[in-house]
Length: 256
Image 1: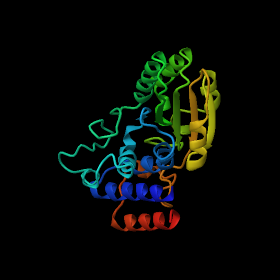
Image 2: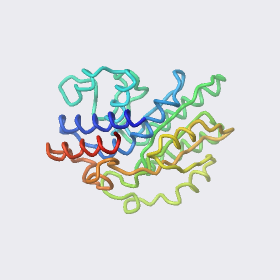
Image 3: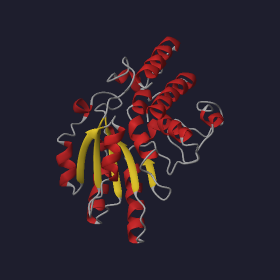
Image 4: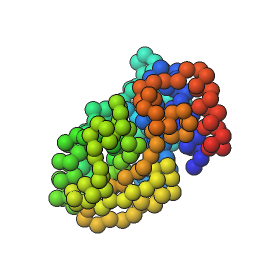
């Protein structure tokens, strides 16, 4: 899996640099979660929604590795008339739903899961959320609905890097004790290392009955790049040429 992890992180870095775009830290924290999903869990009939749509480059880079999109399309990111928006767009092959405004991915995922369960279809729904969007009321309304309808085909993954756009989660709106909160809404909750493909895959494949599943994936914002890790400047900042060179070298060494 290191090949995919290395390639995806390298593409995130190169494309962010070229397009002078943002959200690099948020993209880097999701990589192993996306690799676990796309290279071992998702089946053709399953659905995946990236609710934290600002991590679009991480998803586009993963879709390229899975051959949903070409290198030409991937490299068009940041150019005029590209279909690759800064927030994920369903104009892109392999993208289920356009997201960006936080708190929308889970309600849509719940609706899809209900449809599949009502029709006795053996389809699963996976949604990757940010910890910052747990501030949104739609998250908790959706969980009440999912629990009421016993949506055990719904898999919710929280990218818990503990930093949102402007500061650390604990300083903006406290969400702990997070596991107990999800449990109180009727979910089966697991915690794991969000940078372990093996652990994430194992939990995603775990069968749960009559409850939605929540995986709290403990991650590091800016993962893989020493000077980006846990540094919220990289929520909006993009690297200069020297920083890009250093970052790419770190990726090559770490994920050789």
